[in-house]
Length: 125
Image (cartoon, rainbow, N blue to C red; front, top):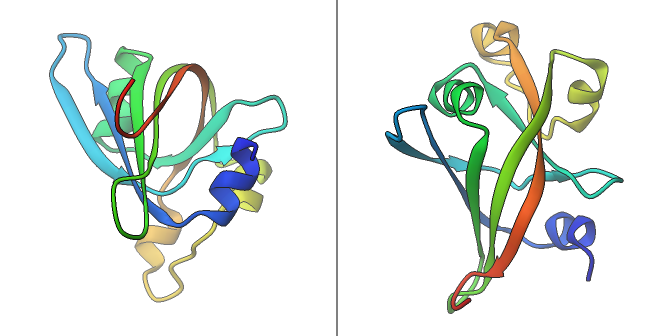
């Protein structure tokens, strides 16, 4: 199964880990990535710590734990290659909206693209 099909059909929990330029690490719960036609992974980010970290340090790790019993999933070592802010592409990729919270709807969002440097199973290497 290719990654686009995998992430479109598999439910689970994702965690992205980033670090600032000094190496101070952060981990955050993130939704499934968007798999682009060229194989890049893209995440929609708000202007918070994870986004700030990838401005200073382009390397990240993403871990996806599949829903269900046992420990199945994938790990990715990533490098940021570009980003765009509040673009039409970002709007078409959004999976959620917040109609009851106008403040969340007006916040800037960034579509951040990553190259996959390495893909590993959730358990083992």
